[in-house]
Image (cartoon, rainbow, N blue to C red; front, side):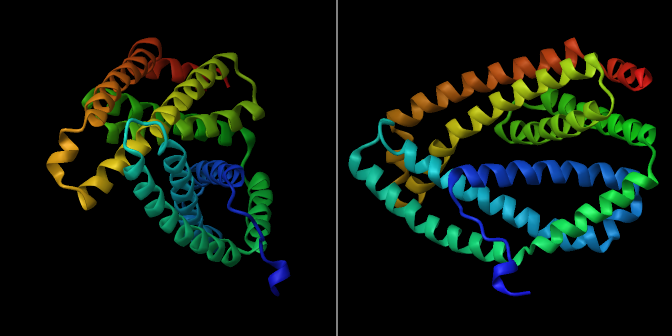
Length: 270
């Protein structure tokens, strides 16, 4: 295969977003497939693609975060001199990320997509729709329980990142199931989950710059100057208020409004 047969793709913000969205969908499909077929995890299709897809996803995320930091460096209550230092540091990292990203995408041949497509055409014949639906709803139930547990054990940013990942799995898998067999109750639940996932995404974007700046100052500036910074005092207060608000919404959804029994009703309705 020559270079013209390789995937040629840019690393602009919109393209990176689309790549990450598609990989999230494929990841959810892989999880569902493993539940349907235990042997899939050992298959050549899975092993040949799962690692490089993770690498592409993470690197695309780093480039996107670097873009956000560059945008947020202006007008955030820090000195122009510090903003320039931050931008220079991010631009240096960005060059490395983009080069690594290009190498990864060149190494990920379009034949991989063809192999995956062929596998799922065969899978569609092997598994009946009913089994796929019930397995998918079982996956939703498991993700639901994970979110519920994370919501009640600790109001930490780390837990919120994990909750966001489980919400994405619910939305991707749920929308796939809804296309197979429409269910109004499930559709409403998915819309609620999608709204929460968007809120968590907005929260994540807000803290990216603050987290980077904190790490940057820890490495490059006297630590006492950082802790006395008015910027961080204000930012930490706002972030804590936002965390409480997000957790309150999640608790109301996953501990009050919806229960595991209601998810069972979705399953029975199929």
